[in-house]
Image (cartoon, rainbow, N blue to C red; front, top):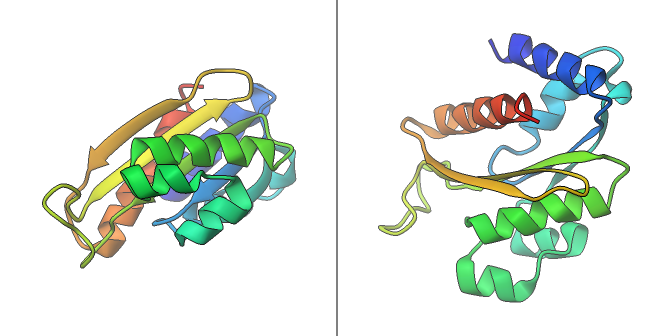
Length: 156
């Protein structure tokens, strides 16, 4: 299913003349892997940033330390800065960002395991954000997150 969805997204990116960059935390580069598993992916995929720590989010994507301190790594504010940073630090004209709590630990009452924040943006357009709450184990939460953002890319 993921491979088929990735091919559909790749065709969409190609026909829309879009080049993708990804900024991923809890998915560990899964979006980038799916895109680059497809032959010819350099036509629609520029690069992926795996920014698991707060420091890497700041160093590679320019996420503001005040944003991380105030809202945390798993927040719509942080993924909005991640997606903008991915566009700034790449040759892409569309980017996605994902940060979440895949579990089995790390959750809290305010931010439970399964909470994942997303952002997607085309260059020179507004940032779109969403927070989703997925059920299941670590692998399931991560897979659902990848499916969600791939489906959102079809709306661009």
